[in-house]
Image (cartoon, rainbow, N blue to C red; front, side, top):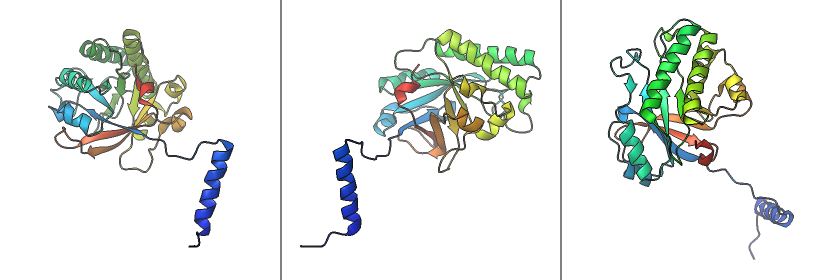
Length: 256
């Protein structure tokens, strides 16, 4: 009879003890996989996306207002692909959440409130009503890029901007939005933990890392709900690279 290695015998004994005590076996929690898309992906074949294992999607509904979208100045406001993406993804029973990419070009608290309300109005007009199974709306808060990263707003003004947009959207849609950001952008708010403590879920961006760098004291000790871990993913049905995400919480908890 072959001799069983000591390591194998120890593992077997441990598993037997776990079973005897009625303890759950150790296992790695499954993280759901999702994507986020915008006008830049143009026409998407959502049937193929579904077959490739995508379990949820965040879709851009709007970005900025006027000409403040410094990356594509003449392409602010509504995302012309939103409605199609939303309808086609839902046909495949892929839960969808709408997001708004914020842009900034004001200087004081009055500007912050006015601009946030204007951008919330654009977003809400495009989204309309959320349906059963839809994911929470999202505010995409990140640097404009370049030397004028957040207009001329300081920390307090940015916190006012964010809270104003969140309040406007929650009042209209009846659900607390998710905040999307990254560690470096969030420092512009003073790395505030106030939104984490108020219960807003975090969707954090940190590409090609073993684990994400989470702002605001690990988001008030609560950690991230969704992690955008790459901008160069490949998914059937999407031409070119696409952002990929992991949900640490059950996708049901992301629902509106």
